[in-house]
Amino acid sequence: MVEDEAVPDRKEGTLQVKGLWWEPGIRRTKAMDAALERTLRGFAKFNDCNIIPITIKS
Image (cartoon, rainbow, N blue to C red; front, side, top):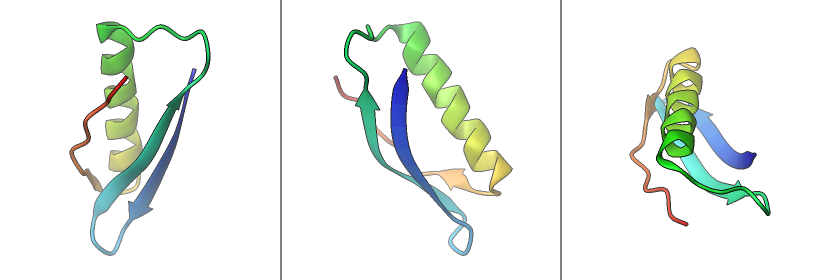
């Protein structure tokens, strides 16, 4: 599981991802990264926001 701090700024129309935390024992894969990106994009769309580009690091 991944926890994140994503803050929608509806006035600016952006979703700012301020942090991502991988729980111990979770192995990152390309599929996990793709699922996380889809989820964040869906959350941004739900909040009428564009997502600010982020780089997911290990």
